[in-house]
Structures are given as C-alpha cells and as structure tokens.
Image 1: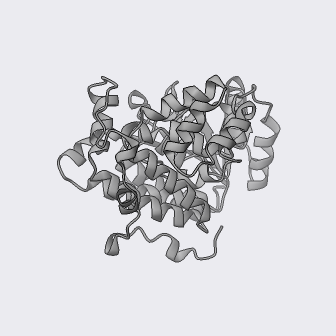
Image 2: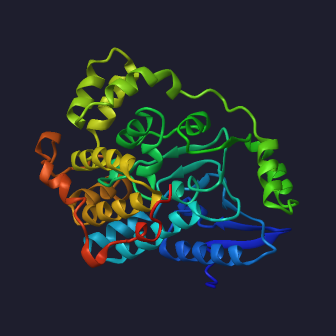
Length: 357
C-alpha cells in the first residue's frame, strides 16, 4: 500500500480509521488519495478483525472540499487526460463505498462538497453536525454534479435535489437529512465520545446501534418551508422556464434562487437538468456514474470548466465569461453531446451490477 500521508490509516479496536489529511487544502481529493482509499477498503473488507470503516477529515474546517480542481484546470488547459483517469478511479471508489459490505461511517462535519460528498454520502452511516455545510456546487465552475451526485440529488424529495444542483447552494444538517444525504445528527461536541464508543464496537450491529444512540435532533433547516415554490418552479421542462417561474414567484428566496442560477454556466445548467432527470430513470448508482463519466469527459473539453475554475479559484475575480453566455444560446444538440457514448472509453460500472438498486 502507498505510504503517502494524504490519507492516514490506523485501527482502533476493530474499527479501521481513514482520515483525509490535506487540511491546508481542506482535504481536497487527488488521485493518490482515491487510490489509497480504494486499497484501504479492499484490505478492510478482507480483514475479518475489522467490523467497520470510519472516515474523518483532518483539521477543523471540514471533511473534504471536493476534488483538486486546480489540477483539473491545469490538465484541461494543457490538453491532458489525467483528470479522466482520476474520475475513472474516483467514480469506481464511489460505487465501492456504496456496496461496501461492512458499516462505512462518514463523519460529515464542516465543509463537505463535490468529491467530499462522493466519499461520504454513499456510506451506510452518515453523520452530520451543526457545522456541516454540504453542497454540489459544480455549475458555478462550468461543471456538472458527479461522484454519484445526480443519483443522490435525483432521489431527494420533490424537486429539492434539482434546486441544490442548479443553484449549488450548501445545506446544513437538517436539510441534508431531509434530502437523504445524511442519516444522523450528532452535535460536534459529542463527536469525540461517539468516535470513542465506535472504537469499542465488536460487531457491525453494535456500530449501527452506537451511531443511533448518539443521534439527536438537528437544528431547524430551511428547505422544508420552501417546498411549495421549489416543487412548483423546478418541475418546469427547461432551465429558462425554471428561472421564469422563480422570478414570478412571490417568495424572496425564489427570486434569489433565480439570480443565483443565472450566474452559473448556461451549458452546465442545461446539462445538469438533463443529467438529474435521466438519473432518476436509471436502475442503479453504477448506471448513474457511467452517465456522469460521459458528461464529465465532455465537460472537460469545453471552455466553461477552465474559465469557471479560473474565475472562482485562480484569479478569484468571480466574473466568469461563459461560452455561450446565455441560456438561449445552448442548443439541445450541445446538451445531447454530453451524453454521447464513449466507445472503448466507457466507465462500464453498470455492466457488472445489472438489476442492483
């Protein structure tokens, strides 16, 4: 196994700990980390002394802010393909986590975004705290929700997932629970006691029971009170009509959502709408990841990804120049190109999981 210390591994009792360890980068994932996590899960599954895996993030700010998008920007600008190889392994890891046969406990404390959602929200026990801020903000960098995010958001009640996907808004603990992105709320002050208790567990059943014992009631969220206009507005057939409905709605939060959406990449918005709607009809997470790989591969070659990362992360001028700049200029043909088969380049996860849910 690799000795890179960007993922720290140790065992307490019968629980294998995985700690994402790039705190200065808010534990952003790179290819080496994905490989280390995959190797660690293989070892934990095969080790009969391990009853559960526990994922945490180093530092005080959060579990994981996502993938290393600066590296993806540089790779795209140079015409490389390292990002495609990274996504291939990352998406396989996402599927691996979802099918892991032992409890996979993810502590989603602090910031959890993009790729951080991928390594946590597919787990079997997902813990949030009052500090949790969970988001899939890809449309703001000219990209589309991936890491199984289209499956997760597509399964959220009503149109809540579409709202989060198009706006990129972050949610706290209660809204994460409402949307099915988490299982239990535990106050951050109780996390040390929870982790210590988990380390004494000797069976998978005890791990589940311990997490439930520490679970409490999350502070009130916001989305439940907005379900009426969210479900009505985001049910529209096009992004243009969604924005029009949000603008016409009397709720200030709806008008703010329209403003937020219009600042995102027009192409990414239209592809995201199509991707979530398609994901709802797919039979498995693996099929959704296969679709996301096609979309990500196409987005990687489009100008908005490089421009979005430049504006948000590199120059930080927050003024991306999208191409095209208007929703009306994004054709149906351009959207469809993001879903085109990749031939020999397909991810191919669903082929081995026919009939899985």
